[in-house]
Length: 238
Image (cartoon, rainbow, N blue to C red):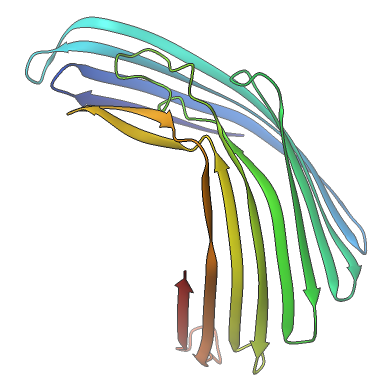
């Protein structure tokens, strides 16, 4: 079981806004493991609701109620994953998520595939390809006048990662070089329409790609749990 609640109040030049929101849900995961495969199947159901009110501003204190409304969203996720040791030097990760929501017209299917291959005891190849999906929050869906934005679309996209990792000197030196590429659709950004008025909009399609390098060196390895150590880390991206 999980849940959260928030209560916010904002004094603004044109009106005062009060927002109450809460969310709650249930998550259950079933496991099945054998010598070569670790399989997971899960269900997650959660609901969130928001109540907002706009009041006349009197230079700080709130005056008469101008507008109030509420919104509720119900979601269900069915997800599964499998870690398969195909051979001693080859591992495959397969996963998927099927999301149902009353805020979208049809369920959204998000698959994922990951591979790991050992070229030797100190050199490894890894890669992954996956689809992502994110609903706008209820706060993002509220327009400055208090109305619910029915035209705001969920973010979704694909992400690709390819890389090579090297471990040397009893794993005390680790070097990871990777390439990433992300294609996002319906990216949600904040647009300023007045001095103190903002709304969330879809910015269309974006494309991100680059190279990342991570270096980790254990200069002095602790001999006991409480003994001091010295570690050097370096990260670069382009």
